[in-house]
Image (cartoon, rainbow over all chains, first blue to last red; front, side, top):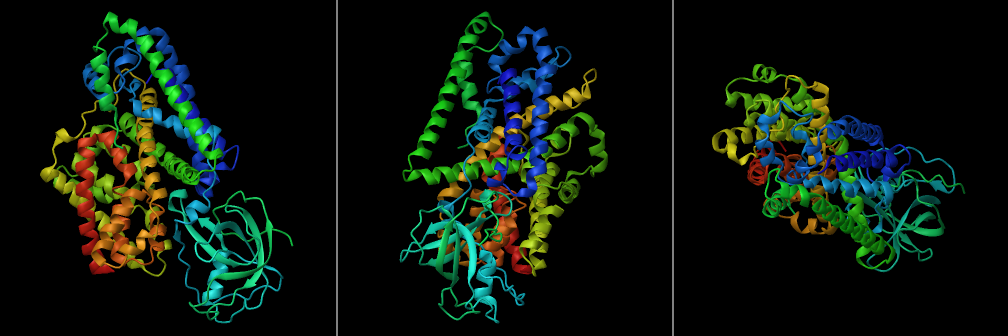
Amino acid sequence: MRHRVQVLLLVLCGLGLLHVSLFSDLYLRYVKAGLRPALIASGALLLVLGLLAATLDGRAVAHEPAYDGTEGDHEHGRDHDHDRDRVGDHGHGGHHDHSTTPRIAWLLFLPALSLLLYAPPALGAYTAARANEKAVKQQSRFDRLPATSPLPITLTDFTQRVQQDRERSIEGRSLRMTGFVTPARQGGGWYLTRIIFNCCAADSQSIRIRMYGGPALPHDTWVSVTGTWHPQGTLGTKSAAPALDVSATRRISPPVNAYTDSLPLTPS
Amino acid sequence: MHQTDEPLGAAHTAVLPAGPGGASRTRAPRRRILVIGLGAAVGWGFTSAAAELARSGWLGAPAFGAWRTVCLAITVQALPFLLLGTALSGAINAFVPASVFSRALPSRPALAVPVAGAAGVVLPGCECASVPVANSLIRRGVTPAAAFAFLLSAPAINPVVLTATAVAFPGSPAMVAARLLASLVTAVVMGWLWLWLGREEWLRPAARHTGHHPGHSRWNEFRRGFQHDFLHAGGYLVLGAAAAATFNVTVPRSVLDTFSGSPWLSVLFLAGLAIVLAVCSEADAFVAASLAGFSPTARLAFLVVGPMVDLKLIALQAGTFGRAFALRFSTATVVVAIACSVLIGGALL
């Protein structure tokens, strides 16, 4: 790989990382929020590295025509044989073995350009249909629910209260939840879904609430749903289904960080 | 999948006699233009095909979108750790004299292995950081067996990962202890196994980490080494991420249920799942916790194998140490890790 291509690659990788972490919130589609400082630092480091390589090694190139002449040719893929040939060569020349980089590095252009120009969307219904169901924690004591109506509640909290709260505090309450639409395989209907991960999008898990009623919506639509618990099984035990009888749905714009199970902030 | 630079290089030597001959000088610019042109065409074709797929919502499109997201997520998540590892490796190369390691480690390799394995505690991060660091340790004269023990133990037993495990398995500290113990034992056994059976010629001979040279600026050496290692390992990271994303997106989780019943199959299955999913070692405990149908021993196997062997690590190791090494070493590691998980899981969980 030629010197100028290496510089370009370093600069593009740096800019790509800075673009998604410093200048926008796009990184939240791929990794957790806590990684932001590390991403900004990495982007800045790569950018500086590329600029240093351009200025410092650029002069060496100008002084030494062989640098991107013959050397550029047999460096491709022959990195290691080449390194062995040149071990004794260190004394002279403004550069040494690090100028050779194998072709595999070209692959880095894909994520760099992807981050800069065409960042893929957050995971949606396709993944939710295949992801693990998130394990819901066992909880023995529940706080009293506020009197607000409809009551904003997270999908996790709803599932826990339906299956574990012996006080049956959500019985008859009007509840509001947000998530995106995924189709149900059996019996029509749909699920209100959230995808949650701990580190990056590769370890995603889903949490789903079965919805009864409401209009048919295309999958991946973000909605705010109001409704009451769908009576099925015994409330407060494992037999109760995490399901909702929908009284109203409203389309909302996707949240910036789609991978959290946070409370709906939509005003009533 | 494990496409590396060798075949390409061989093709080049056939076309172009190596050496600064006059013929190669004149043909070089044309060939270079051809290569750049081809690269641009492939890149453009890929981008437009991707855009086309995204526009026309045919059946494959959501799968392809998810693949791109997961592939990019693995890459973006790993890049800071890869940079950390590369920076450490570059710093070891340029600033730390070889005598430091010969004094810190016992001179007998059989004793150096457990010490290096336990030293894995100090590298906080996930597995991508440990490959370049282990490589630079070997270049600085550390016996390969000890460097490999460090390579295997560092991503699994550092405080960040153990804390995440404790958070993911509330109320079962035995899981944390079993993970620490099984990972450490696997790493040490693999180090000893390398002393017993390993051969130097499996390792790719690379002369680029040759330490500090008198007369060169240390900072400049550090910067160049850093740049080289990053570009090299980064390419392999993308390759590994693409392979892992393919499995991640195409394997439906419903196949999990078919394996969770049998105790033996479930251990093997979760070990295999850890290899193809390539979940970062800081997050794999949460994935293991969600695999509720499986026995604790099977989940332990997932936690022990994952940080030591997965698709992106195999790609990184193949790039750093050579393919001959990566395949043998990964296979042996999987066998040892499963055996340790079953023994220690059976005793503790």
